[in-house]
Length: 268
Image (cartoon, rainbow, N blue to C red; front, side, top):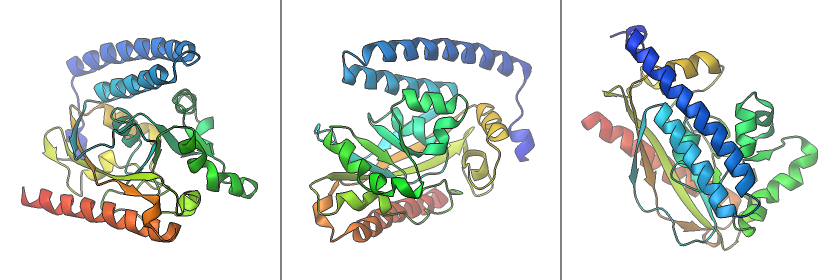
């Protein structure tokens, strides 16, 4: 089956999607107004509304999430570290976790996505040199305010065949700090019931210079996407000698688990 035939949809499916998208759009506008109003009264409820929006995105894109492992739920602010393959990673993790995502400042200017990211309490990192000092302490500052942080330390999306090297600069402020850190592994398992092999991964993974619009259109044509989220044991910032040791340990934990899950899928 060619990738072209794999993504073809019929007239009935198109009509069904348009009705679904109309419902999604209406609910999104309602949630934006509700979140804007309620954030002045309850931070927790406004965060829950953001989580509901992420769940709506999963409903729209037909994503089924399987969670493995224990999520840190002891009400202590936590830094969640994850590998990164696609823009889909954001609603997937956002549907499970309540927290602030970290993104490059350029995304804040993207049409629609930039606005939704701002409504979703995203932390934008300005990579200009004059903001270097602020960037180094920003994660610790938000954790001290009581927020969970969700970070993709690869700094970009991968092709799904490996976990890229982690950048350590944003972890500088966590050196020798009593901060909880939980590594997470995202593994896309199948699309339309077919195991996600090397040839089908580009349908999910958004990397390099792949255009966003046609990639998103192909995503919306899929009938089902199955993804596995693996929560690894919680670590503490005090357990590492420095940020480079922390970065290396986190990368090793996530990369090993991701590689093992890929090997296991070949045996299924």
